[in-house]
Image 1: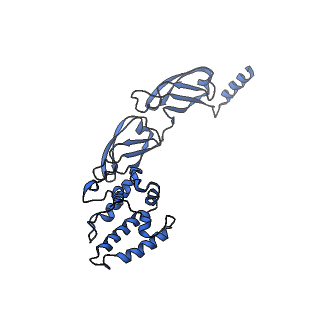
Image 2 (image 1 turned 180 degrees about the horizontal axis):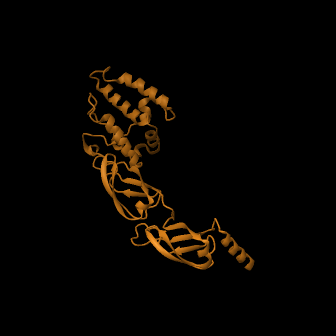
Image 3 (image 1 turned 60 degrees about the horizontal axis):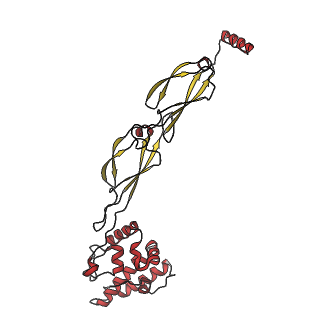
Length: 295
């Protein structure tokens, strides 16, 4: 069969509302139902066409694509075709009755991959499977090193490699782990979005890390050596005399791993927070008073 005008089949115009479509379908379905027209091949064919028209026009997205592409609707986005294919299979596959083996129109077959009995119509259209989306929550320390992790997606266990340096909100694609293709089409893909929680004292800015380090007044004035924590260990730092509050230093390559660049790291930026002494003794107060007089 050739392309069918679904609006004409239901006896409605292109401006018909959803209520108009439903009303027209119910009226015609009752009129041509096989139970009311036994052994009437014409009624069987008409009933099939009515159901086909309703299948498309009663679905707002199907109708929109039908209105836009007409006979070339099949060139619309593959994902939408796959959804419609699944809907068709759920509704029609295994259907019994006098019209079950009847050919659907070429247009409907192109949309839903329906069966046909001869010629070019006997070929089924292949559709790519649906893409899946998942969210994976990790701690910041989990993405400091590359590691493998097992996931369960759509009741299927898969094992993926998570590269070091993955960022919060980043999405990676796992090819072929989405929905199964239709009529031998390729599987869809799995898209994983990372939600990274930071429980550390370090603030991450892409590949760089920032941290505030307490520095006592005497070290700040006179200089000296302190030991601080980096993300993966401790390092010793030399403090210059007369270091000012909020002064910053950079430790090269002590930051976060750069995504998919093994052995390459960002920098660690340290901000000094000078801590004032408290609970001074009388002697300390005298000495500070002497220092104030000298200044």
